[in-house]
Image (cartoon, rainbow, N blue to C red; front, top):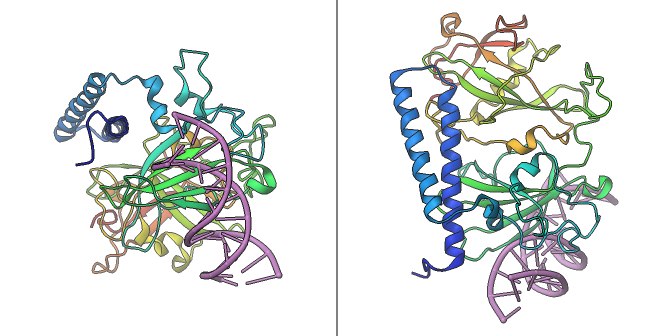
Amino acid sequence: MENNANDSSTQKGLVNELVEGRDLTKELQVVLGNEPQSSSNEACGLMAKNILAKFERSLQILQYDPSNHFQFHLATTTTADSPNSFSGSPKSMESDGDFKDLAEHKDESKKRRISPRYTHRVQGSTSSGLEGPIEDGFNWRKYGQKDILGAKFPRAYYRCTNRVFQGCFATKQVQRSDDDHSSFDVTYRGKHTCSQATSSSSSSSHPNNHHPTPKLEPFETLVYTPQQQPQKIIWDFKRDNNNNIKDIKPIITTHKNTNPKSCSSFSFPSNSSSNPLLNHSANFVGYGNNFPTNSTTYAYQSPPTLMNNNGFNTDYNTHNFVVDHPQTIHPSSTSATNSPTIASFDHHHHHQGEFDDVFILDNPHFFQE
DNA sequence: AGGATTTGACCGTG
DNA sequence: CACGGTCAAATCCT
């Protein structure tokens, strides 16, 4: 084997794997914690806790220091004034906002500032011909691809499409995982400074002068399906220039801040044949214990640190759905079809107060294989 | 035609 | 000098 345990790159890889395992376990805890209590669920929670402890202990044994963690993820030298990474604008790589959290603990103030990265593993599709994970709400333009030493798959480099005209220097890297070919490690670097979110249609009720409110912030919802636990989902809407829904994609989130926000004045076309939910049923997400994936589904996550930034794509809008409780499910006229259909939906405010539109699924296998 | 991607060259860093 | 990140000409795509 070419891997030597003392090799520093091997150690970095090990630490990264452990950190990822730890973070995934934390995400699992969040998922479990948001589901109704049951004995099996409780057991899963306990198990997740133990697994997390193992990861923490492993990192401890390796003398893992959180303040150094980003040495593993970070480019080696990108200081704020580095001429290298972003040749365009000198002010391009301020590390502030949500990224600050990730780069904090820099106890030694003399250390040069590193530009923070945020790496996230997302599920993609291996069979659908997609070369990478699904959209994350931003418009990216690929500018390079490179074979990486020790990696089976090349790494793709993307930059924000608004780089030229708006000086937005956000970039991301996408690398297919070596071991799990269906997942990708997506590394975001730089904060979106473009106005992808500020010129959108729904400029309704937020007279927020100072901070341009991210109108297109995805919303977290609880989704109830028959015979299944509620699932937390962000529904991401893509609209065309006429503000018609062009696409809808669910984003599973483990975002800690779970206060869903209400959203009003939205309606689906009553014509069910033009209902985008139906047209995209094959693309729906599978994730987590009660969210089995199959070959036609895939899962992805939006990077939590980017979610509340202002730079969401103008073409995107989001809205809440709550699939109502199982007992209100209307049985479908056709039982043989596997494709989910919407039996009805309700635009009244949900009694929970936080959700507007209530969708009622008629297919109990909506999220099942 | 013009925007996006591909791909080898180039360059800074360790 | 090897490696990873970026550039940019060529090519592809619509």
